[in-house]
Image 1 (cartoon, rainbow, N blue to C red):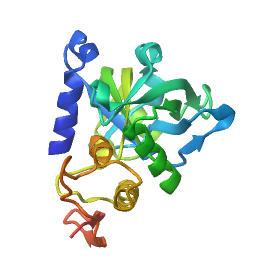
Image 2: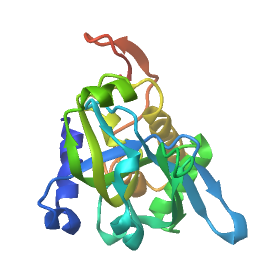
Image 3: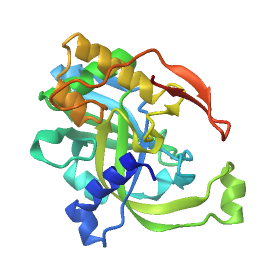
Length: 247
């Protein structure tokens, strides 16, 4: 577990819902590719895929079909990077639907009415610039463990653990989905850095607020800029992974 993942898990463990379930929590997210701003009927909604059943960097699958979304449907609040104070409110989920449909459920789609605060404006600016925004779901695992041989054969891929059923208690927007971030800021080619690059450009052009970018997980200081985005370079790790790093 990376320091960032540990930090986010600690935030989740402080949530009242998680405490009521014994303190065990996990995170599953997506890069939010295909996100869009929908301005129909003079509203301001963000429509985005919140998660998939892909294998994450912890070699785990969290099955979208296993979600119990009753708590999240009742609460509907969306946050910035799993922070639960009033200032970190990002919006309200207006619609939560299986994608592409209930019979072929591969992911969850959310339509969120974003707030007019700096965080909401930053989310909209990044989506308009990149057609994506990271989305991360906080959950409490119910049925989980080592995959069976039947599950491995059916799903394919090399994964070490599987979460078959889980309680979905919150959703956050983020510039760095937790299961792709690491301490060295080296991430899988593209994806997360598209959002960070975008936020950096928008910050430089004074189109988004520094505090909002920080709240969404951008690696900068809240008060003083210490991070810029130099040209990336591609390296091959000892394990053979191709990653981009910042000098």
